[in-house]
Image 1 (tube, rainbow, N blue to C red):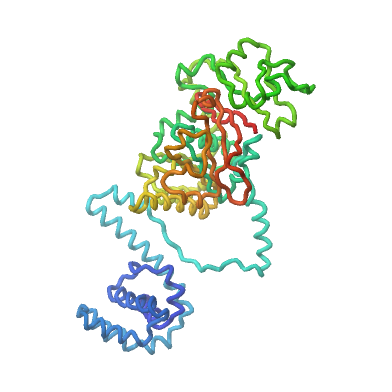
Image 2 (image 1 turned 30 degrees about the vertical axis):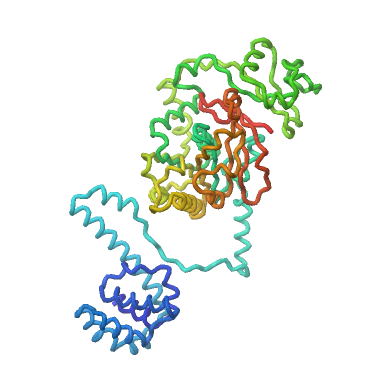
Length: 508
């Protein structure tokens, strides 16, 4: 009966066609007759922008001449067309939209059930399981829009001002001033860097800092690392020691310092040291000092103390690196790793979910399905981290550039629909290996990715390897919405990746 009412609506009511067109799927109908006639109605509507009304009889005659199954023709001619006028008058269409949408929900469930059962009957259990995992019931709601004349809009403004600029992950110091404002709910942030530049480590830093700030985090590994490898990185991060012998024992760790402390040009009373170790100029220290020079200074000047005590250091390009010798001890053991994970995650009930997939098997739609499954079990993340977008499986097979664009669009949609912060990393082009600072030209595959992110940052180190050796990463802003920036401006970040720490401090 309901499918007959739907057909009457399609045939006789233009408004019904307009309102149901975004929800329509012919597969929701069960009757082959209803499917056939509905297809005629939609063909007519697309051409003339109205319901066919009495023209349905002319359409039927034309289709009949081209050939229609006899049983279908008999049903249309004897059951559908004769009572059309009377039923239209009796049928108020006001409730038909609600009835149709409710029927479509029922049909989705029935079709889903049939799909699973057919796979099980054929012994295709894995396919049935995949269908269960990917199923997402489409619900139909009227688009009300935002009515600015409604007083409730003022209540909405409270939410806008309280959440739109609230950073979900907060970093201290110069780096915090640099990018905290971009790490907000609904944001889509990406890090661009050449291979082996520490992109995964930065995602790990986002994860650990977020959960310490009581955020819920979902981390998706798309195939760059195995679950075991990533768990080991988490353990190394927590313990600040490597599981490898060569990175244990005595190690040099970068710490914050000031160029005027190092070249003895500071005369402030709050200075922590009363002598320097070099005559190099300020900028030469920042751009040229080497690991060998710093180690030699550490050994020759055992009483030297690093200093960044003054307010001036916080705002001006005075930051520098000092290497401090630290005894890491023995390599990370299983017992210590368990203690660290238990103390940090288990005892504090910090909510993180890690989903690991083989290369080429994770797509944005699968991420969405997993998130929906977690939501049903009570877990909705504030932050979604993806390592990394370039190796996500494309939803549609087409030109590589268009596939990449589709993935970035889908991730942006994810950040909007889930109202969360999405952060991913992406590979820079081949030219980036020969550059000291990344520019907008260093995208890989498709530059349209810049249009989908709310912000993109570059991870930079000099091509000679000096900064990598002493533990300095320069971060620049490649694009950002609602923000002023200069691509050549960078924030310097200290790091020691061998102990799992991509962030030990930052300076201008």
